[in-house]
Amino acid sequence: MKSAYKNVPVREDTWERLRGYKMGSATYDQVLNELMNALPLEDVAEKVVREHRRRMRSRRGRGWKAVRKTLGDD
Image 1 (cartoon, one colour):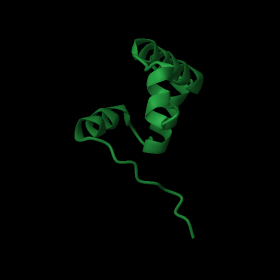
Image 2 (cartoon, rainbow, N blue to C red):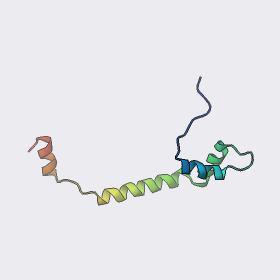
Image 3 (tube, helix red, strand yellow):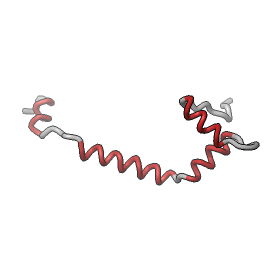
Image 4 (cartoon, helix red, strand yellow):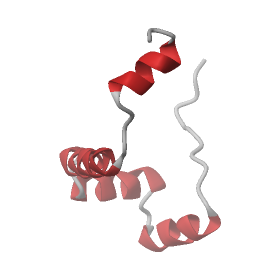
């Protein structure tokens, strides 16, 4: 039987921040859902893709001749 609850490891400072959002009788599940609802998944994905593209633009690749040589196709 699977547990209905999951453990999510977080750093101590993150735990302290999360505890600050928990007020009254709210559960951590409710707090996390409220926070996730405030930041749509699409916004998070867009940020990740933008960062990926930025890193790829700054990455220096190898020319085809170097790749072929590495593969033994020269």
